[in-house]
Image (cartoon, rainbow, N blue to C red; front, side, top):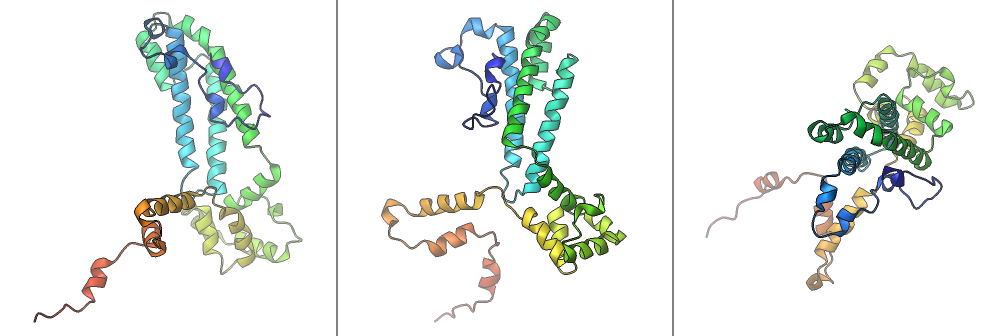
Length: 273
């Protein structure tokens, strides 16, 4: 079953990394009642438990990529971490260890009478599936040495080689040398993320900070755009199609907290007659 879910053709642009793990067509999804024979098929249920664990991990990483202020650096860390975990899972499967898949591990512990035989049956299938998923991830998120190098000097400005900034980029190179000589900035970087650090350096290292923020400042999703459309659609009902919702939408989408009590306290009360 799992062999059908691996990415057989990584050049097929219609397949997404998440879709690469989709469960193939199964009888249980086409019948109104749960098949008793399937419910007692330990191999089938073990495969299903494995897919549940994989989807749980994919969903978790997918949510991390959809944050309002998710940047290129955040996405780079998330994808790199997932690829690292894939390689770890493959190595552990080769040793017969499945503890990294809690649902599958619990199912086998509680239901299988012949754990060794069951694991031997599905182990290679899971390993092949994970390798296919790794190929799929590399296809959709290819590693670019130039892009990786540009991120490294932004994320780790005090540990990369001095040549990370080219000598021809003279203003930035001078700022780079001056900044790296300041030991106090190393501690400052440890206490904040990369984008906050470079924003704080705008006054002292304007050229270098601007170059870094052009990369760090890239937001990877359009959450605000989708929220805007959703809010306007909610306001523009059939009875209010001609309404001008500009001010209402601005108020609904603003991240600024309302100060109604403060505004009301500054107003003079209407005297009684």
